[in-house]
Length: 405
Image (cartoon, rainbow, N blue to C red; front, top):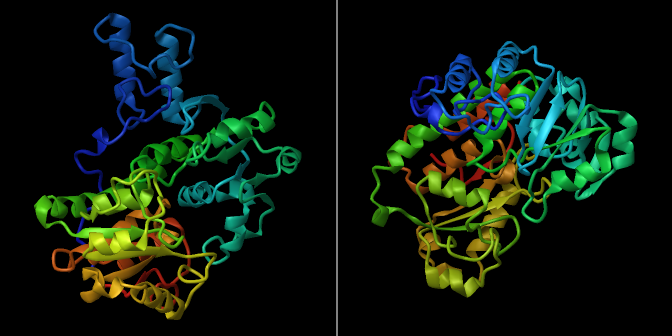
């Protein structure tokens, strides 16, 4: 069964991130009456001004800032200013009536908020994922791979374009802003790195006028992550399983800076590639043999070929797993000997639904400690409750192979 947890904000939640929106005067994770109290204390001289206390950016903290915070809380603000994932200060005219989603993650998160009706253009990945994006996949495509059709976007006249802030190679939002602003406001939100998703999701919630829905989702997945982390904390470091993580490309390990590494850490794995240079370094097969990991996990999707929402059987995932087991010399690796080689769909790795991947990893790593953890149940709740999809995981999709008991 699914872990029995209450879907409420756990005690440490308010401490988990700082909401990077002007108006969050006390630097916690939400804009509320406490920020009004804090600004009052600044005015009286009882508190120092903070990065987000000068809401209107006029160089002083006064009653005008209090009025703006009140409008943010009531949802009647005319402008919202934030620090995006490219570390840009962006002011957005409010409310947003239309937007183009230039990365799949923002499309997924906007669906969570129930605001997908405001999206008028998408990237090719969304158009290709008809099972997951049944409605959005029908919209005009304005970006394919790294090629963005700026002229098409400008002709559509959206209020906002949501792009990656940083994609590991460049500050995408900064580059896109050169071609789109001032006609279209560009906001950089990554929404795929586990350590930043809560903060970025909260920002998106305010931007779309749905902060409650954003915090409901954050509470949902952080509650499960907290339960997993509590059990992992009981495992001594010397007893944590040594894991080789391989990303979609063969022999592309996951190292520091990759979402898969962060997921492994949360699930209690000891990533053998952690010290390697780069977030996805190419490794020598002999190095893996020498390291002798106890568990091997490969993420897979490859354009719907092996796993994901479009697959209804595990034949291709089984063949991919066999190809890994049969690599020259790998039969001597402990993970292969012990039959602990797993495939994980990248539909739940490096995505807003990364927490589902974490649940699967926890089951792969520590099946006894997580007997009552049901990744598929968590996944189904996410699809039904937050994506509002009529999709039965017992009948469709391949997301882990072999499926954990």
